[in-house]
Length: 144
Figure 1 (cartoon, rainbow, N blue to C red):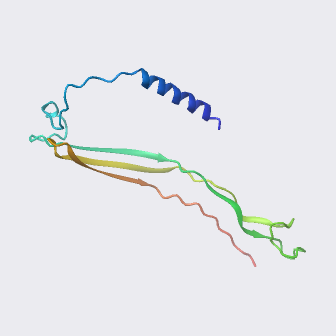
Figure 2 (figure 1 turned 180 degrees about the vertical axis):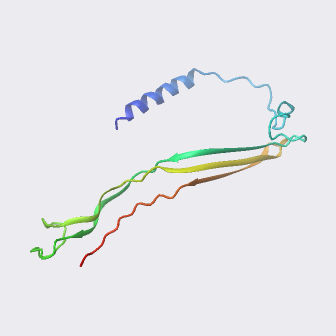
Figure 3 (figure 1 turned 45 degrees about the vertical axis):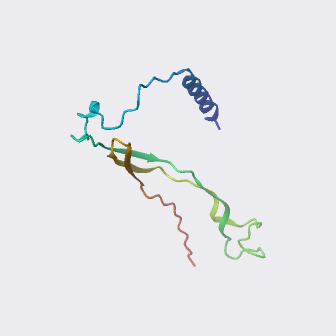
């Protein structure tokens, strides 16, 4: 909630800045593979082009709520009529009843693409996104 006013201010400033910018005039549309890109990496002599990119990601996911108690316990010999019931004073929540905090996950994104026919503007692009596995676990044991 503390970030909301700052985010709103940045959003409004970006909208005002975008409204003040003017578009550039374009004489005519030029298909990909034009001669001005002939010496660029990925440009073949016949005008076909390709592109590739990679990104390193640090990804945060929203914490997982488990607001309800899933497992409860009570001490041995509890005087309660139903030991471990939620409304008993000697009941302890073992699992659940709190937020599961997920750590940051590392990953990557790779993109590879190319023009099939530069004259027509038809191309293909493929993306691969992966993240490291994030597991939140709790172990409960019984001594008796």
